[in-house]
Image 1 (cartoon, helix red, strand yellow):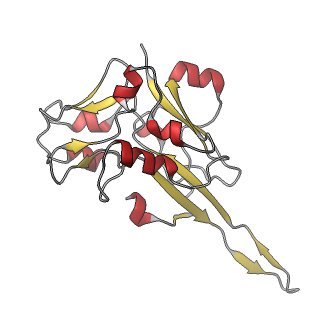
Image 2 (cartoon, rainbow, N blue to C red; image 1 turned 90 degrees about the vertical axis):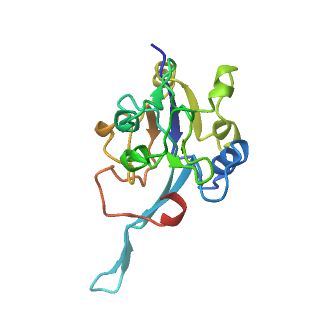
Image 3 (tube, rainbow, N blue to C red; image 1 turned 60 degrees about the horizontal axis):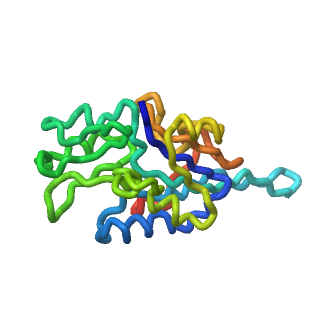
Length: 206
């Protein structure tokens, strides 16, 4: 069975947010929502030794993430109407004609992927650019990335091309939803359960 997913190279990402803006433009999203978010994750500190020498372990890296079209999507599990569902190609989508806008998907998703539209009063989210995918194209965020830090394909193909992990801080424990995501970690990356760093741009991503 086909299962589409994303690859993200954190060693290449500069946090420019071109992927985010391309998605907003293509999906005609207002300022209040975005389907792809770029986390600015920072950590470390400076300290002075007794002889006066300063030392530091400061780190910073970026994490670009959207819906991960999980194998165990909690948004689908909690949806009371079946509006949130997985397609045959593995992409998680919303049937707006069935959605009642209850917001359970929004509350359940650890990646903050679904949002309740203030105008349509239904859930909206990344659908992997379903229309483009049906034409053999890649999602607009992948095409727009100037550093080629993103890729998208069937997970079998992605795993053949890339190695990596499925989560780094500040993302959640991957065992919660089994995301279809491969990440090449930045040398500065923290493990997903390492909480010594912090999200420096919380208003942009939450």
